[in-house]
Each structure stands twice: as C-alpha cells, then as structure tokens.
Length: 358
Figure (cartoon, one colour):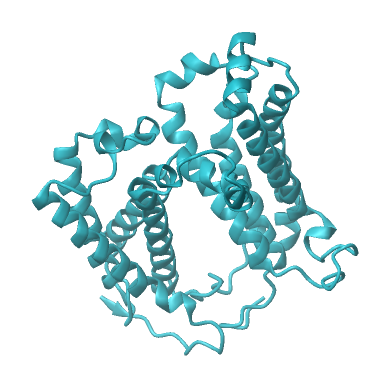
C-alpha cells in the first residue's frame, strides 16, 4: 500500500475531511439501533412493519425477519468502511480499492435512493402547506400520522447515504492524488469545462423542467374540474375528500421547481433579479442552487423506484395515460435534474479554495 500525502487544507475548506468520521458515527449509531431491533424484534420501521405507505417501498419485498439483521449488518460494515476511508490516506491495491469504493457507493445508493420512497418527496412537496396551514387546522390531518418513526427512518437513511457518498468521493479523490475539495488533478476533461457544461446543461435543464410541468398540468386540470386521465367518478370523490386540492399543491410545488430548474441555465439563476429587494444584482451562491436541486433529484429518483415497481400504480393510473405517463418519466426527471445541477456547479465553481486550481 502507498501512503498519499496532500497539502494542508486552506481556510474554509475542511468539510471534505469530515465526511468520513461523520458517516462512520451516523451509520455506526444507527447500526447499533438496528442490532437492538434485531435482538428485541421491535423498532424496524420498514417493510411489513410500515403501515404508512410501505407498499411503495422496495423494502416491502424483504421479509422483516431477514431485513432487520441484514440492515444492521450493512450499516455496521458501512461504518467500518467509512472509518477505513479516514486519514491518513493510504492507497490500497487496485482490486481492494475497487471493492471498497464499490461497496461504499452501493450502500450509499441503497440508503439515499432505495430506502426513501415517495413519502419523502410528498412531505417535501406538502411542507409549505403543512407549515402555513398548521395554525389554522388545515389540512385536516393528524400530524402524528405523518411525522412518524417510519418517516424519520427514511430521512435518516437519506442523511446516512449522503454522508457515506461524500466520504467515498473524498476518499477516491485523495487516493487518486486529486484535490479532495474539487476533484481536479491538473488534467482538463472536455465535458467538464464551463463551455461544455453550458451546452449539455441546457438540455438537462430543459428535460428536468418539462417533466414536472407535464405532471402539474394534470393536477391543475383536476382542480379545475377537468377529469384529465381519470374518471369523472374518481374526480368527484377527490373533490369531496379535498384530495384534489392536495394534488393542486403538489402541482404548484412541481411548477415552482420547474421554474427554478430553468434558473440553472438562465442569467437570473446566477444573479438575483432586480425585484428581490436587498439581494438585487448580487451573485447567487452556487450551493444555494445546487444543493436543493440535488436533493430534489435524489428524492424524485427514490420516489420513482418504489412507485413504479408497485403493480397497483399501473392499475390506478392506467400506465401510459395522461395521469401515469408523467410519473413514468420521473426516473428521467431525477437524472436530468441531477445533471443540470452538476452542470451549473461546473460552470460557476471558479477557483478551488483548497488547491487553487481553476
């Protein structure tokens, strides 16, 4: 094995060094809790134990008796892997490096994309309504039914997956003798240049904006009393229960998201527009645009996996119909939005505060 040395980080660039220990602590703690659940038979919030939307989670396919110890084992081994990726940086032999990186990425993907499902996206979409309407008792829901242990487990998995992904990425950069902050190694790659990112980023942003707008159009039609893609009876039922307005809220959330997505390739996405008093003309912080877009991209992809694997989805929506088709395109939406966010990052990242490249 070869020890990798790197220059000390400059001021304000220490976050990359924290991903591995944070991931190890988070996954280790949750792994211990999962181990306790294995021994006690209580506390596992997924699969058959989840009575709040577990039918759209891929973990429904794994029996609880098997899933609980498996979950504990994966979390604890991932915590050990994250510790192995901490400093000092040692470059292992090629096969071992590939195995460790492959396992880390696989677990990170499972935690961030497979374990969360449509509930994470739905909660993010309804959050403004829930916050504003709570003092007025609207929507008329039992918040304890929404904010429960199963939902916490989904967000905990998302957080663990993102921390582990950050740890693996930093470790791969460090052992490849690249900058852990920006990934640059002194070799320019054509598709990562600002000019190239601007070209393919426009396509990605256009696709990522069109799909949620198509989804929103059906929800707006239902709110207007038009049974687009559904029966008149079903529309009447949604009007009586108020679900049509919940759909309208999700449509509004999707529309705002589509507009913000276009900002990733527009001038007003780089500098605050003139109507924003106090911020007009100032540069938009890169992370302010990239982080929310990346989180929504992950949430959309996670939602699509569980939703589209459920046969009930096709029975209710008719599959390739005005109702179902926009949702069938959610995996494309997630990938396109992630690509658009990455292109925005490549265009605007500037010089790295850690290595000075760029």
